[in-house]
Length: 328
Image (cartoon, rainbow, N blue to C red):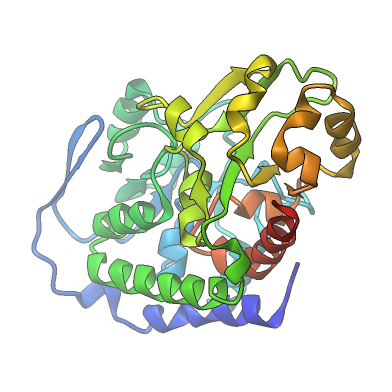
């Protein structure tokens, strides 16, 4: 949902682009350690490509348009492969959409190579070692630090900006976003201390297993930015290196410490939940403390990224606060 604050916040990032990124005083080579070893960047990258989810938002927020990035497959309402906050940022920079990589069947290595990048950013991704090694034959690759799909938004900015030779601007961007989140979250005191659980792949025709994101996932990590906490039950069930988990419906009592239940999908899922003999016993379901994210921009941006945070923050906070007011 578009609003003045969101547009203003997206355009506000342009202050960073006024810094002359080509002349920043950076000592090369830059060495970045990650899950697959160490990447060495010997000189300032000019042509920046990104793969996987949202890595392109880091250079865009810093005023640099990548030579290519992955097309959006989820939350892209108009089907052009570009999410609304990315489109707004490109327009603010006066730039056209660059080459979009189709990653429906995995990384398109030929398309990435064709953009002739100086560096490939993938701090938030699920790269396999084989992916990493193939991409490394094209250009130096900035991979995730520890485990797939577990890099939080701060680390995504910090690692990718370092790979661009823009570490200082990356820290400024982090500070700017943190200030914005703190200011807007403070307007919803009812969220403070409430516990939240993010359930995924909810199928109303088969509620025998509950799938959820663990404390390692960026969506769950984002709860703490919004003054929420991850429930003890989720922390207990989170396994090292795994961003998702599951539990049998018979274990539903374990989640009675959850105040707010967040999931994808729409209102059509609520009735099956409330009518299920076991699911209906879950405290958050019983009290109606549920946030249904749908499948549009709000659902997409619940996984926080540099540009999406400002775009949906007010809507997300309002939905969470409405659920919190029903919690008991």
